[in-house]
Structures are given as structure tokens and as C-alpha cells.
Image 1: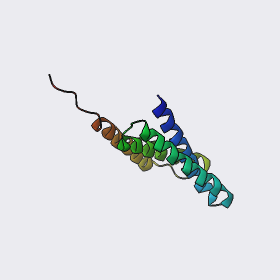
Image 2: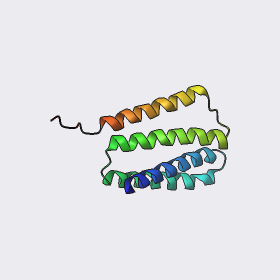
Image 3: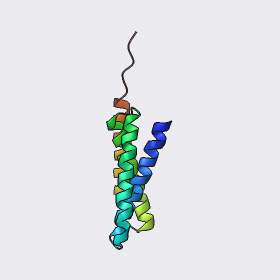
Amino acid sequence: MRKWVLLGAAIVTEVAATLALRAAHDHVAWMVAVVAGYACAFTLLTLVLREGVPVGVTYGIWGATGTALTAVLASLIFRDPFTWPIALGIGLIIAGVLFIEFGSRPEAPTP
């Protein structure tokens, strides 16, 4: 359970840092949040890996979820476009992560 809480926290901090990066375009003071957010996200990712989650699974879930949340929140906060092709692309990313997750599980031995 701890590994998923850490991964969730890594996703939230990365999304916050990315949105702060967008905000820093207009107000440079947001760069403090960008640096702190990414530093925190990568620290949390390290802790997730120490919990034994494979790097491909960790990065896939982190990247896909972060991408989806960033796209949705940026459209709400900054009025960035959110079109059907973007939604389809996010769906394809999620499908890819699922393939990585299922492919990383060891095969059950045959009797």
C-alpha cells in the first residue's frame, strides 16, 4: 500500500510542478514551485523504486497519469486546448502502460 501512496504523491507533485512551469511563463516567482515540485517528485519516485516496483511500471504509471492530469487541469486552469485527438492520445498512453504492467508480471508456472 505504501508504494502506491508514494507513487500517487509523486504524480501529484509532478503535475503541480508542471502546472507551475506553465504559470512561470507569466510570473517568474513560480519557478520556486517548479524546482521544489520536481525535486520532490523525483525523490518520491526513488522511494517507490526502493519499495520494489519495477522501473518500467513506475515510470509508465507516473508518466501516463501525470500527462492525463496535466492536460485536463491545464485546460481548466489555463484554458489550454483539450481536443478529441488529445483525449485519444491519453487513452493510448494508458493502454500502453497497462501492457507494460501486465507484461512485467512473472508468468505462472505450468503444472
